[in-house]
Image (cartoon, rainbow, N blue to C red; front, top):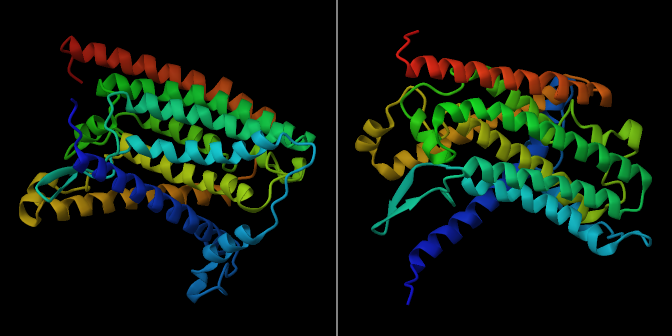
Length: 353
């Protein structure tokens, strides 16, 4: 008879609920931050009516989406029409399962890891889940029975597939150095050491550009090009089904930022501090809290960069987007991979540089 560790199940359940809640709250206030960043860059105030400094604006927007009329077009495929936004939101949330949000807590005589699943193929899991996100866009556009929506969905699907290839190749050079696909292991290798960004700057910049494309962010928001396609692949959606599509973009931005911080900037490592020594002075639980805060600050900096770029750079033409992906990023990623492999080979043969 297999024994069931109910304490373990309770830990993971609480952690899953907590991470989902935090992701949704962060995504909600990303919409507020987006407007404020845009306002600063355009020399205006931004949201300032709902609550102090406009802080209740995301709640007002959410309430508005809940109260709007649910409309399903008569000639649409109703099952797929409902499935599309749900799938987009699900894949956005699933990626967070393998991100190590901090080290561990010591509570109730147990060591509680602050990572939902430390699997040894963590990065492959991320790519597997991200690749499913294309179905949310494609199904939503096709099920709407609207030519503008279908054209936008085809654009979005081809864009995501193209840039996933460059994203995967950009990480191969990093994985040649780490020797592991576990995100926990990759963070551990950077603790109190040199972040992988300094070993793989080109790989990081390639991954960052691909992250913009994967999140449908400007200048890669061709599937939501309102000047060409009215409103994009979610043209026919209203109420919370539209909210799911809009929310999934911001959740993707949050999780993508967490993945980049984990792979290239030490994850939850506190910069310029020896985490082990600090833990001995203040205790493991306080250390875990500070490490989680360190990761969150790194994520916020990436999110700000996403927003900064959106309100600075104009949208690409579609041919420019495809040319950059296939003729720019993929060759660069291959060159980076070959050069990294050559340097690793020299080091293994005792060449010093």
